[in-house]
Image (tube, rainbow, N blue to C red; front, side, top):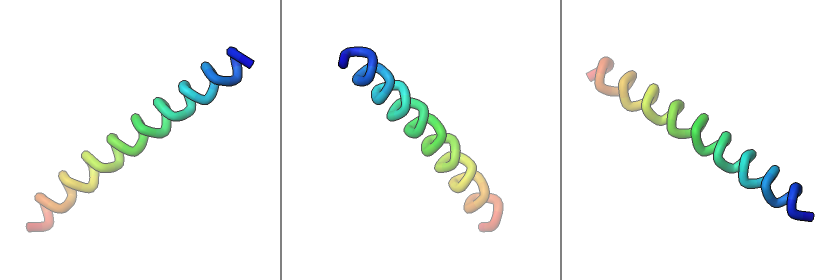
Length: 34
């Protein structure tokens, strides 16, 4: 069971990282548009 928990944590961290990158891109694009 432990390895499953670790695996989930890795997935969550990975998704969060992707989300943050997307968010930064979105902010940059918005600033450029303005």
